Amino acid sequence: MSIPEQHRSYPLNAWFMACWADELASDRMLARTLLDRPLVLFRDADGVPAALDDMCPHRFAPLSRGRVRDGVVQCGYHGLQFDASGACLGNASAYSSFPPGTRVRSHKVVERHRVVWIWLGDEDSADPVLIPPLTRMPEPGGHENIGHYLHVHANWLLEIDNIMDLTHVHYLHLGSLGNESMRSGSMHVSERDGAVRAELVMPGTICPFGPLEGQLCDQWNNVEWHAPAAMILDFGAVPPGAPPIQDDGGYAFHIFTPETERTTHYFFGSSGSYGEEEAWMPKMIGELQNRVFLEEDNPMMEAIEERMAGRDFWDLKPAILSSDAAAVRVRRKIAKLCRQEARVPG
Ligand code: FES
Ligand SMILES: [Fe+2]
Image (cartoon, rainbow, N blue to C red):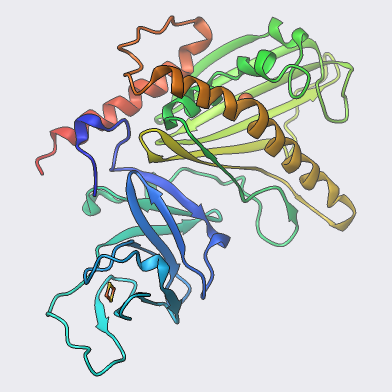
């Protein structure tokens, strides 16, 4: 079910986002292909997330075509049941005998920061310490702008390039999130504890949206990448010369997971939790993001994917600009993760 390592652009030994936590309910399974592997995600009887290969060992029916009750998945074809560990529990009919050891492969998942993370590589290396630190994710209860999802027909690294070089906002998002004045900024790239940070500072430019929209301001649009594919933006704008105070709601999350080599799951949202009287705020931000990503980013990513036609990024000898510094650094770190696991026997 997995594809050979030399054809993969992604590591297996990493925590990728499988889904938003609230995509799973006690009576609802989720069928999703992650890293070229068809999976079914659900919650066990205690509400803990679980992931199994989405293929019954009897006649290979997708288990996601069945149902889940009390944490047990029942195949929709002949009714074999499987628990969260993947062990077969038989079926309810008179013909329920099955070979000992019948099971489906299960995978490690962890629910944290309202996200279900999955590890599809070597299980012994699956250390939850490596889960991206989405500590700005709002607690459930208020009005929030999280839980968004888009499906993109493009390789996941193109998506990371896009977020790690936010100068694209000044061109691709001209008139929506960006304007020409913002092209006069400067970028600084740094690295700490394996996280790559690109700071884009644009003093004395026109604010494109928000309370200062249309006014002269000092604005910033920074991004931090955490392996393998979680990016946290901190952005804001203040009147010229004012201290650059970061607003609680000024963090955005962009998280990518390869579905296949040429398609990507795109999860996004932002920080901040709002009361009843401000319920319009996260709603407005979410709708704006959805529209911009869907109408401006996605078509560009998909057009690039089509032009590249499956050819290797480096083989095409891309022209590297100084604004690519963060994106290139991230690409190299991901390539290193892939190389490292290729050297591990088995
Ligand atoms: S295919 Fe699943 S029980 Fe037969
Ligand atoms: Fe964009």
